[in-house]
Image 1 (cartoon, rainbow, N blue to C red):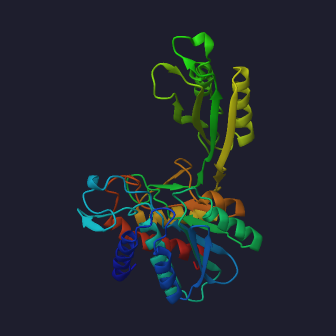
Image 2: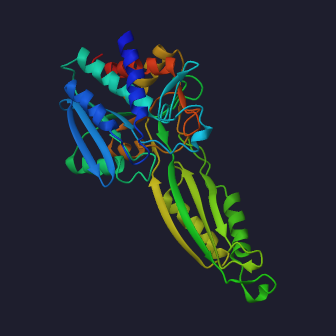
Length: 381
């Protein structure tokens, strides 16, 4: 990788950070990327669904098809006064580039773009197809982003063989961890119905908090499965719980809570739902329960893509990456069902979503060369 390319990635990342693209607003990020890639000879397609912008840029013909996947939207900043500098004005300080999205994931998007430019410049007649897919709906509901694009691709019969998601996967140093799969995520929205009344006359009311407590304790203590070779055991967490009117002399009439499963392939949404519903029924609760599956688990088996990424990271980063299925969800969950091998690799994730989010400049300048080396390994070597 030449020095001008390294400088280009810092400049492009900074330009993206300046655009206040709080989900789902793309704020012009994709127009900037599209202009650059069109100049490099890419075919550009803008796919807008609802309030969400999606960019599909391709270079080449037929297969194999290698997609670099990312997002331009960022999470809200939180209190501005807590930041050491304006979150939308990139600043290099102590060897790090600061700004909202610096790590998650405008650095990854910039590095993939610069890598694609360098790759097609060096290999204008390369085999297969290289592509960039970018959405502005990864940090939000993830309804009109890659989920909708994947539906469109399925209708079109769009082939994807390999997908590299540029999410910040690294833990301590660049390249020390890649994601080769992700757990599924399913949320239950539960209302336990009781009878409101005066706390001094509990015999005339039914406290849903008291009624639900044994069932909730059982659910929290349940061992849902033992996991398997690809995934850890399923986890169950209650992130939100609310009851009461705010008065300390009123028994509430309803308890509302949300609980979430993160699950691998040892369980299914159907099996988890059945066990929860059986527990609630066993405890005689009057409930309303709605389910939301935001993604199914996927695992990329050891094969061409995993070996290429591991080999390149070993050579360029000097590390043997851990191959993990941990963490949250990513848009890779929508691409894997299309039949693609999916691997996630990107910068260190220690500061993502935090105040003073940042990426190490040294890491950022190495990223385009790593992505370009993966492109070469898969398509021309």
